[in-house]
Amino acid sequence: MRKNKGFTLRFAVNALVLFSVLVTVIISAVVGYQSQKDSLTRTTYQMNRIYTDKIADTVNGLFDSLFDSLDEFGREMSKDLRRSDLHERFELFQRTHRNFNAVFLIGKDGILVEGSNAKEENIGTKIDSVGANQALEERKPLVSEPYMSMTTNKLIVMVSHPVYDEKGEYAGFIGGSIRLHETSIFQKILGNAPFHEDGSYAYVAGSSGVLLYHPDKTRIGEDITYSEIVQETMKGRSGTQKTTNSRGIKMLASYTYISSAGWGIVSQTPNIIVVDSARGLVKELMLYMLPALILFIGVIYWLIGKLASPFSVLARFAVQLSSRNSGKVAFPSIHHWNYEANELHKAFGRAVRHFRFQFEHLKRDAQTDPLTGLFNRRTLDQFVAHHISQRLPFSMLIMDLDNFKSVNDTYGHDVGDEVLRFLAEALKRLFGEEYVVCRMGGEEFVVLVPTDDAEAALNDAESVRSYMADTASPTGNRVTISIGVATYPAMAETSEQLYRKADDALYRAKRLGRNRVELAGEDDRDVKSS
Image 1 (cartoon, rainbow, N blue to C red):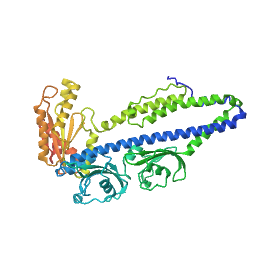
Image 2: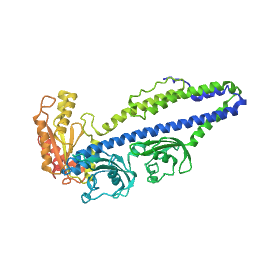
Image 3: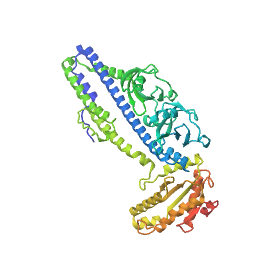
Image 4: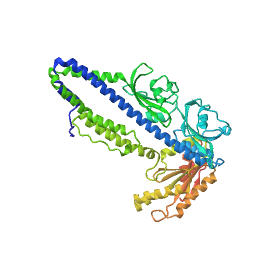
């Protein structure tokens, strides 16, 4: 069994109170209460400030990323605004940047050029909104003031970046909207829980003093410029302060200015939590104090300093986590006789390592197949569901390696994996960015073709089949594939029907000799059952 290092804080306090004296109980209680209250207050401020700094850095980094993405996409689109797939490119950009509810391009005259959610009749109309006017006026990367959308009547903010033509002249801006009442970046970063168990919570206020995020969604959009803390963030300041919230509860608040957007993030904890904790500790001390306490008061103060030192080390490291170079900061080493400090140090270390690993790999792992680097089944289902919900015509190619089991049996699974990667690379090379290429699992792959033209889809499928049939695989021999093709909406109304149609066509291709492409038909189910 693992032996715990050090004594618990409770044991240390109980051991000390045996030396205390009755005559000094009142003085010790007052000193202890005030000391603990001040220490807990500082710790609460510090932890809330660590939290707000970390969230501010995260939001700043997110907006920098959004600005860069909009800038790159805007420059690409401005090269040819008459391209035939302009609307589809906007839709694809919005799907791959899910922080935005809509993405659009507006010219310098305020005319809507294109948008991911724009209706055809709205193209070419003038957009007269707070966000658009602010972007046209300031002509710089910005996050707009919150305003009501003209189309959805919802409170939104707009992230925008200016666009310039080939001569370097201002041509308008490309922007993305974020609906504040719906699931947004704030819910993703701050979470959906209304309050912590101790009554702590966080909120975000815009540069004009309007609530952008609050655990109570009914308050989003409320003007809270009356708050002294919000007035400080509106001035671009960060700090800590005692305050009273809208319910009349005294709070210990820390706040950080979010420079990229001009917002303020506030995290606050009820002051009563600190008071109750301090009172509880003093009552416990009073129950065990002995008359000799006056002789050991110096020892007690020394022990308090020793007890606080490991937590201070961890707190200083936590402050460094809010910087962008946090990954280069070495985790501090603590060897202390206090049990709680040692356990907290180990738990904190595990959390930091897990956070760094998860931050780097979570997004990639959630969307891709680890063997081939293609989209996985989950991401494929999301694309299919979106296409069908938007009534976007497309075709589905389901393909399967012929006699793949014999490849594994003959050459081994390592070579089998190489064959799977070989096919994946062929698909990525043969199809453009507008195609969705996925690995369903095993030796089965799926490609979503951005057209419901069956003849075009068959040609795409044939190009893959012939490539595999004519090209030596990692086995040294050619490995063929069979492909089933189905189109939406001509052949199916739901994703289940489309999968079944394409799968039936694949089965028919296998049944008729493999190394062939088959188009789904009405009798596919009969063929398979026969």
